[in-house]
Amino acid sequence: MAIPQQEGSLLRAPTDQKYATLERQPSSYKPLETFALEKEKHYQQQYGDMYFLRLTKLKPAVEKIAEEAWDGFQIAGETVRKVDRVLDVRQGELCWVAGTIYMEMPLKPNILDDISKDHWISAPPPRQKYLSPTGEDLTMLEDESGRLRLVGTPLANEMLVTGCIIAVMGTENSNGDFEVVDIKVPDLPPQTERWHTSSPPTNGTPRKKIKLDDDDDEDMDKPAPAGKKIAIVSGLGFSGTYSEHSLEINLLMEYLLGEALDSATQESVSQISRLIIAGNSIALNNEAVSHDTIGNTRKAHKKYGYDSSAYNPAPTAHLDNFLAALLPSMPITLIPGYTDPANVSLPQQPIHSAMFPQARTFGPMPPTDGQPKQTGWFDTVTNPFDGEIEGWKVLGTGGQNVDDVFKYVESEDRLGMLEAMCRWRCCAPTAPDTLWSYPFQDDDPFVINSCPHLFFVGSQPKFDTASIEGPDGQVVRLIAVPRFSETGEIVLVDSETLEASVVRISVS
Image (tube, rainbow, N blue to C red; front, side, top):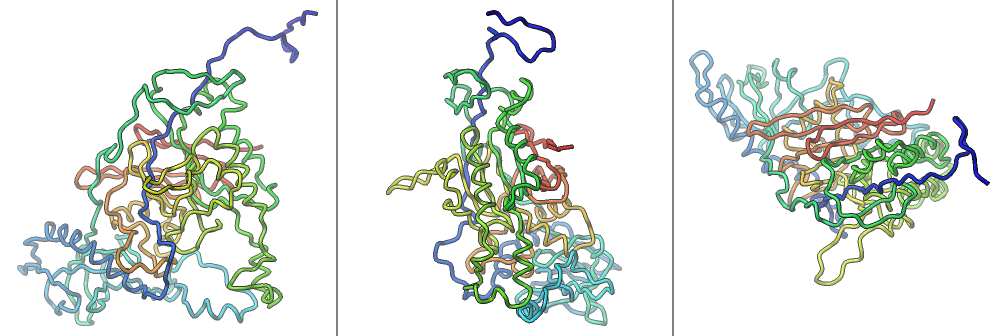
């Protein structure tokens, strides 16, 4: 019986039209072990050594810039001179010196406050800013010899936080304070060319194909379409109920898989070569935290700070299902965040694969003797993350570094903080003062030795992007990735131009 075709009818006869099979663009990916810690970690060391390590590494760079800028500089006939240590500054002499900034702020968190929380009925809410409304904050410059208080108008025009290395020019006044005339920072480090450590793929390279329609997946040898895209999403916020924004999550999954889209959008989605999840994939269990801070009702269940009665396995199970649905289609890089099941102190180590019984089947094969470590389609990495994607050097974090710097300054400009970190050559300057960190003794991995081409940070209030340039032609694309649970936005980065765009998924 023939089925009549009528205009506007949902019941239609089979069509003989052939649809082209779309291929997922291959991903060129090389993670680095810059922030990986040894399995045997020790916390007996002093944290102060990190600041001396940072100063030792960055002092030559900032002194070189300062010397070039201030060579022969005169004020009232007096030529500025360099002093090697803070304690060598003499009153009334025009000089410059390099050191580490320390912000003396009464509202900063104190370890004694953390200890006394056990005796409070409820802990005070976290502060949005450490800035004192009465102007009690002090800016100090320190090195191995001592500290010097900085004053002057240039301080108000320069973004400064604890842990950044700078050089200051000025003179000491009668009060013993250093009147600052000018400030210099290390600026952007040297930047390598694209494809510095890997080879670009050729058109004839076999690639992983994805089936985006109902046709059979066949081997095809086509030239690679111009331009790939890197998708970055943050703050998925899977909760125990999975009901708060589950529809947006499902729509995000369908978008990335190319389902329920027109042919033009499917072709655009097929150019996404990799998905990066930048922190806070699990929602913070505020209910468990509030119960834990009221009285001592849960103290009996706690052992070594772990409360088994407050653990809910549902959020990680939902995240595992989400990852397992996407991984047959595209490779995924998972960066932990503050609310994720990883160590709290930076650098956060990769979330253990045991948390993802389904997704881990797409992970790397166990290493064998004499064989180099391989990377699977599912790669759990550190926070911060350092690697090479599509030939570009990429640096990304889950957002804790920017959120902590935000508390030190009056500015609301998150991109300005990202730029300042690049010019300070340090991606987590406030660690370990107010940002928990591992006590490194031999090296400070937070120092940026090689300038990235792409620097992104997750879990930010809104999407923003900019491009900055360095003195030697360095160009860095900065991206603030918004929380998906609040904005429904995912960022797409063009792999050729590093231009960033945003796709918003919303439900009326």
